[in-house]
Length: 261
Image (cartoon, rainbow, N blue to C red; front, side, top):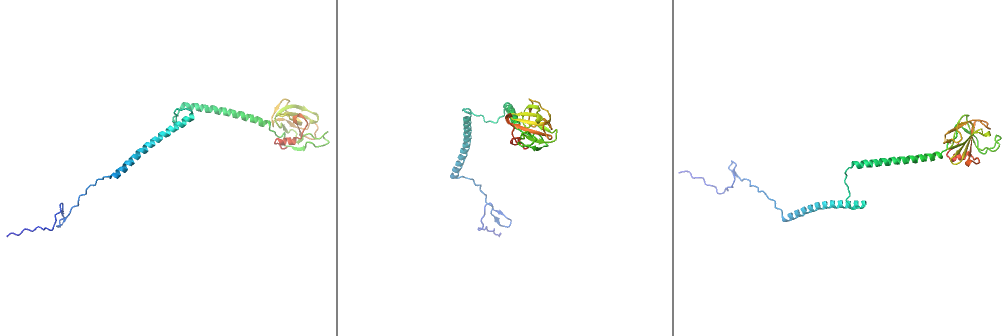
């Protein structure tokens, strides 16, 4: 009698695709993953449509704004130029125009420089006409205007600058030599008439170097100090006669012109 066949166990479930591990156990295979497909909801589709519409509107609005700005710029420029033509606002370089502009600028500068030069020369003449200087240096004042002494027949009519014989004497201001020669008690005397008619007398010179009619400026040499005429020693006797009239005190006149003797 042949052995009976083993009975099949009914309590074991066969799972499709199960594999044997070799230990008598069956392990269920992993379930296959299904690929999920994204299906947007109607609400999401509506929101997306609004976004796309907004972007298109913004792009159109930006382009429209640029056109509007350009039109406004041209309108404003036309208002300033006085016509309705379109204004050239490009940055193109015109070499010929630049040459013309450079030449015009240079010509204008030359003209301005010439006008400035003329103005300076005019001012120099005015300044020179009103400039006064000391008539001599290395001196000391020994007699002033209005003093009395047995040395003079009347009161002293000038200002005495005592110093070494041969000291340089210069014109105190701009003028014309009226006379130059020996004048008794005044010795060698030079008379210079200033631009305003004032006469300046330079007396007791040892030597004179100008002649009547000579034009002299402030600081120009007219002679040298000495002891000619009625003197007690070498000095310059300076007198000032406004308008060629009577003598006045030279000291305040010199001070009025910035000179402190």
